[in-house]
Image 1 (cartoon, helix red, strand yellow):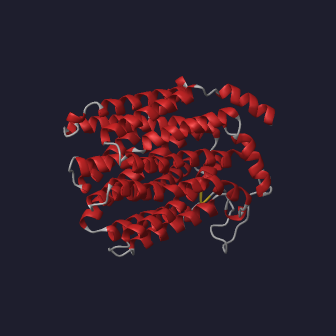
Image 2: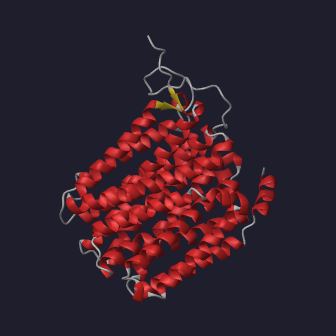
Image 3: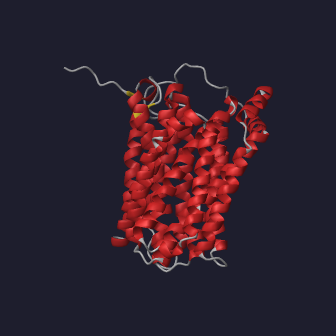
Length: 432
């Protein structure tokens, strides 16, 4: 007889850690690809106005701000016998599977648009909860020397998920309808849920509540009341440089995330491309940008995250301004694709750099919760971008909207220029 198969344990296997965290982020990208890439183009093709498309994107993206309160609850309520974060990851993924399946049951008709918003928001609530839990799991099971590589792979996983399912969902929406796209997305997340189900955080822990196992004996941060957690969190968040970084991130996200609405409206309504073709192209662009993002790490190590982020914002602003100045070239496919690809690579570079900068300034006492809030602010910028587009699309044309996007990106870079990590670290030492 062969030797018994060793259990899958994240803390003991480097390949399993990196594979699982990448897969978890891929799962977060699945609803993004469906709800934020394919559906907006599909709605535009169905005859919905730019303002309606913008309102849809703003509404379904708003639950990502749920991360503002999810972190403290996950820190307070735990079941260590199954792992510190794993129960939350399992619950969030199960909810995401069910929400996407519910979306597949929505019948076509007058109420479909409202149902799409409500169930889409529900799905994003579970995706956001999983994001917080996975970030906490990564901080817990990764050794410090793996942070950089893991962060790059996790971001790649999310963009890959949104890219693959942006393209796939676009094809399914055009040929088979919303039900097929939603059920395929649900099945994909279910497959990743099985990975979470079979892998423990640490040896000896339970796979499920009714199986054998116990909490690993190790030193964990003391679990205090929610009031105490929120108190420490507020102290860290209101430090001057923390506020500066949050403002810069919010402005940058408003500028760059407006593309989520601008791209499909421009491609389908203004340039007359089919929604299916748009979904395929934009998904390919996202995948190429994801691979480009894997090369950003060395530049961050050499030039610092702040400088890379500022350089990316200046480049993005320049590209938006150049595109606004050349409307006579918008119908030239190679030109538009080149501009689109360059912008998305720069957005990916900015995203990785700004995440690294946020990680660098978190207070160890509330690191996971504080980081979750920072990411929630970034995601709030996404909904703010869609809401702003809904307002601007009425009095302004697409050319003027690109100018607004360029100005906001430059403003974000100017705010980030005022940021000083060394001054923040000095205040953190005083706070500690």
